[in-house]
Image (tube, rainbow, N blue to C red):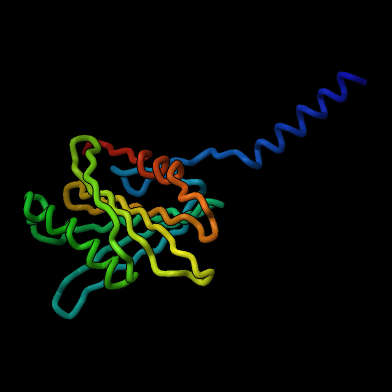
Length: 182
């Protein structure tokens, strides 16, 4: 009887821990860039050509869990000039994101820090988003990285109503970036 009780307890706890597992999956954004997500993302592709000839080839991947929204955007700039390969071009690319955040999302810029992954310098930014339906302010974390002529942005936005800013989830997501050599 005691062995049966122990066996049932072991089965029960293994089932329960399976539901609350925080195991992440490795997702390949493309052949060079991968990141860990809580589950398989949904994706949207958008290829546009504006009247002035500006092309945009954008892919967006989104995943969420009980902590928040995880989003990756991949902007293929290979149709653009080689300006993005120069220090000035890289500086210009990194300067666009804050303008978009302010104009489109009405986000208030809070902080900027540089980081390096595999010898490539990127930029982390923190924004405060306007009040949501629940009338709470939300923080948005953005990690931007320009690899050759492909721009990547990772967003982590904690769910509304959480008192915790979910720093550990943001760090885990941002630090999971893996780059493969060409």
